[in-house]
Structures are given as C-alpha cells and as structure tokens.
Length: 244
Image (cartoon, rainbow, N blue to C red; front, side, top):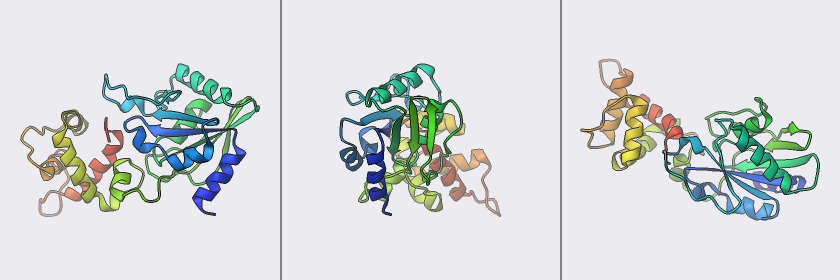
C-alpha cells in the first residue's frame, strides 16, 4: 500500500496525531499534507531536538506547540507532553500516532515517554518501517510511523534536514555544508569544537575537509588525504549541528 494511503488509514484509527518537527527548522520540517489529514482537533505539534539549539536561541513555536528534547529525558517535559496528548481525546487508552520527517526523533520521543527503549531509534534515516503500538501507561498507547516528507521536495533539502541517507554521495553534500560553515560564525564555532580543528585560515570547503582529514588521520595509500572519508564524517555530524 502507498505510504500516504497507509498513513491516512492509520490516522483514522488513531485518537491523536503527534507531528514531530526539528526544533532547528520547525516550519521546514512540518508536513502540511499529513496535518490536513489529521485535522486541527487531533493534531499536536512537538518540536524536538531542543538540546541541539545554540544557547539563547529559542525558536518560535506555533500556538499550542511544544519544544522538547527527547534525548534529555526531562520528566517535566514528559508529563506535559502526555497530558497534552490526553487532553485531545476522551478515549482511554488513547492511541497516539507519531509522524514526521525521517530522523526527527520520533522513536526517541516515544522511548522518553515510555521510560524505556521500546521503539527502535537510529541516526540513520528510514529506520522505522513497521507499525508497533507501545503502551506508555494505562491511559496512553503510541505508535511510531515511518518517516515521511513531501514527494516533490528537492534531494538537497532532504539531505540538509537529515531525512535521507546520503553517505554514498557524501562529498557533494559535505561540500555544501562546509561552505555554510564558513559563512556562519556559530556553525564554524561548532565545527571547530566538534572536530577539534582550527578554521581561521580556511578559505573554501576543501580546506574544511582537509582539516577534518588531517585531524582524524584519514589518508589514502601514498599519503594523500582521504576527503571522501572526511566528507562522510561531516555528513554524519550534520545531524548534531546547531542549525540545519
């Protein structure tokens, strides 16, 4: 069955739909088509990955939306989210469907709510494939649907958001991200700390990848720097950057 048709069917069977967005790009990781299917009455918007934001950077969250960090497992955030979900329906146990782009942390968020590793979580886009209902408590069940995104979205944008696995074409996307690093002070500061490198004299993307390769000891036979491996390291690290 088509993933959108399957999603629509699952939404009908759910009491609440929790749309998980990336706190670093809330509007860019919302899914209008899925929101329309759910309707405003049963939709809860959660902006995850608050922990990756730069200190002092508090994004504007849509009305009634929540800003959380699933990885930090904050008990107050956990209670607020559970209560917010249960307020949307009188059904008990309520069935909450978690949807969103690949790699926004849907599985990690469900694990935070459950207080255990119940849903499979991974930094590799597309990990969740099967629907599994997980009991959060006596009043709430949750399921983690596989990642979805607009069908016409450009691959470059999907790569930026971590929604697709691009390691096989890492250099193309790493060069774009390295260019952004050199243009944005906060990203440059993050990259220097993340890879323990100095980018003060870096003039272009290749300089950034060279610095990573040297620091990580990435060499090809004959002593040439292995920029492909450096690119793969940078692409993986993009998932943890303070902005995307």
